Amino acid sequence: MYLQQNDEGLGKSIHNLVYCSRATPELKEDSIASIIASAQHHNPRFGITGILVYGSGIFFQWLEGPRDNVTSLMKLISADPRHSDVVLLQEGNEVRDRLFPDWGMELVEAADIRDVLVDAMQESKDKIQKQTLAAMLEELDTGSLKDLSRS
Ligand SMILES: Cc1cc2nc3c(=O)[nH]c(=O)nc-3n(C[C@H](O)[C@H](O)[C@H](O)COP(=O)(O)O)c2cc1C
Image (cartoon, rainbow, N blue to C red):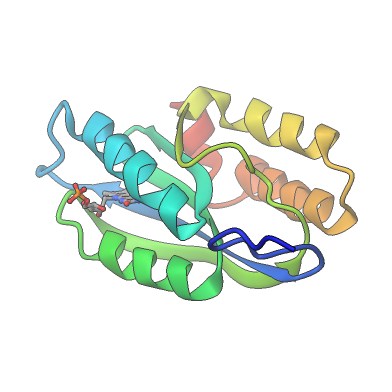
């Protein structure tokens, strides 16, 4: 049997972390591109996938992967001077497939985030995954993420 590095395997839990933050004046015009480039370079090696949304000076990021790797990456990201006011929206361990298995870190336009989540939910065959996405959509429509998709 072959084990891939950082392959969490079937039936094992996956750690996910979702947060919002505010861009600082340190965020320059090309910063988003360089953040995505860093993420696409580093994340696959640590088994981390997810999405990054940016709009109206607000970030929203979904990270998923092995717990220790997600925690270490989040520490690094939290210390990044290009954003501040990091608010943890959700963190947990679940036995389910990845929500965004093919993306090292994909930049999603704020206006498209709803469609991305709806698509992922419709394609999902995993009950817990569907519930997680439904909760995200609910949060997007009613809660703290509302302004993101209106930018
Ligand atoms: C909102 C935000 C999200 C980020 N997401 C990631 C990420 O998913 N992966 C990553 O490696 N770096 C991410 N970064 C960048 C890291 O904070 C750090 O700058 C980078 O990993 C350093 O890598 P480099 O030396 O290759 O540029 C993010 C930064 C910000 C501000």
